[in-house]
Length: 249
Image 1 (cartoon, rainbow, N blue to C red):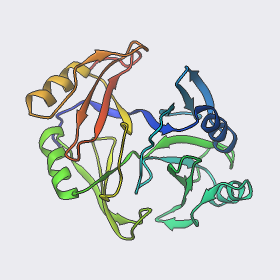
Image 2: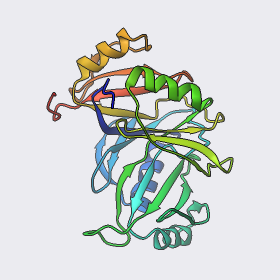
Image 3: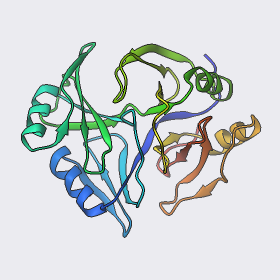
Image 4: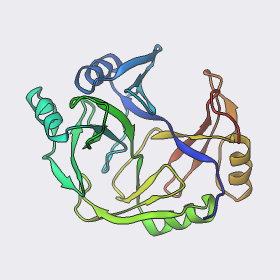
C-alpha cells in the first residue's frame, strides 16, 4: 500500500450558517452538542468524542447534494422518532448493510447523515461522534485517479448509495485517507468542508506541493496549529492541520 501523506483523521468540520446563535442553539438542543469555543463570528461544538464542528456566520451557505458528514448514534430508529417529534426535518429511515440511517436538515438547509449502530458504553440517545467526511465530486474517475497519484490513495470500498438527489450513486472509501468520494456534481461550496489531521504537516506540504497539487501557504492558526489547504480537481479547498497535541511522525 502506497503511503504518500500522513493523514490520520478529521480534525474539524465546517458549516457556514446565516445566524450563528440560532444554529448553535439548534445543534445543542437537537443533537446534544456541547460548546467548545465561541468567538464573535463562529462557534466550535463537539460531541462525546471525535472531530469538532465549527459554525461560522456567512451570508452565503454551501449547497450540498451529499451530506458532508455523518453523526453516529446507538439507536437510529429511536433518534429519528425523537427528532421528528421535535419538528426536525428528516428523510425516512433506511437500512444500509447493518446500519439504520437517515438524513436531517438543519435551519440553513445543511444535510447531516445520522447512522445508528449498537455500541457498548453509550445510551440509546447519545450522539457519539462525527465522521464519514463525504466529498461530492463531479467526475469520480478523475478525482479518484488524482488522489491515487498524489496521495497514494488505496481504495477500500467501491459501492453505490442514495444521495439527496439521486439513487445508486457511486462512492469510494479509502484504507489510508479519512475521506469518501461520492459522484454528485450538484454541490456548490463557498467554504471548505473540513480540515484533515496529519502527523507531519511539513512533509505533507512539501510532498503535495512538489507533486504539482495546488496548495496555499503553510501558516499558523490562532489556536497555534500548523495548517495549509490543497485544492481538489473541482476547485474546492480542503484543509490539512497538525494540532499542537499531535506528535510528529
